[in-house]
Amino acid sequence: MTRTDTPRTDVEDLRGQAVALRRQGLSLRQIRDRLHIGNNDILNRLVQGEPPPDWTKRPNAKDDLREQARELRLQGMTYDQIQLELGCSKSSISLWVRDLPKPRPRYTDDERRALMRAGLARLQAARNEAREETKQAAREAVGRLSDRELFIAGVTLYWAEGAKDKTYRRSEVLQFINSDPNVITLYLRWLELLGVTRDRMHFRVSIHETADVGGAERFWADLAGIDASTFKKATLKRHNPRTTRKNTEEAYRGCLVIYVTKSADLYRRMEGAWYGIVLGAGPDA
Image (cartoon, rainbow, N blue to C red):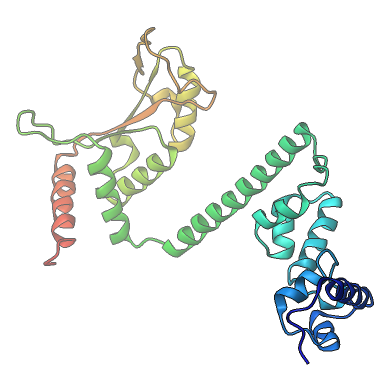
């Protein structure tokens, strides 16, 4: 017999039985089978207001994550740290822990800035180390230059930095000026390869008038292996008060000018070799 339509007194009695069974921990299916109630709407009205027993609740897959998130928040973790730890979204974390007090900052502003500076210093040190390793590897890969390689390097260097002959101003002479000691050293080695002796070289310093002229001449003389007293009179650059000079540090030595006498033939060889290099590097070489 299935109960679908009963008098009021019977309904009240039936409700009492249903509530009692609910409080005993029975599920809706068990109550329905026990009382022979075939209408689910009636069954739900009979037990209205009575919470289902815990054992009938469907487990929530996020319940454990929620509890872990709350525990981590109480330990002082940020949303990002909790997300990294649990692998859930920050929106879910925010829902789960928004009633909890915000953790106190782990570091003061000064401590945070100090940590940032230390981190940047480590990053810069790592970059510098990588930079130096690259330079060292490239330097070692070059090895000892042959005379041919040195000749080509010197021709290229001169064409980039040396004085050149013009159709409107004939000047077939080797004259070179530079402020880089390494460039000067290579140029002198190139001249040596060409058979140019030091007595054919005239040296002169070009420098700002406010700099230490004597100190600069001694520096370049030591580099070239000559006596500073043999230098020609220095060319002084006048200071323009409307401009701000950047090269005012103690290491500023100006530029060294090297003029080679009786060098017209060498100049022509240099220029011809330069155009040979251009042609040799062409696509049809």
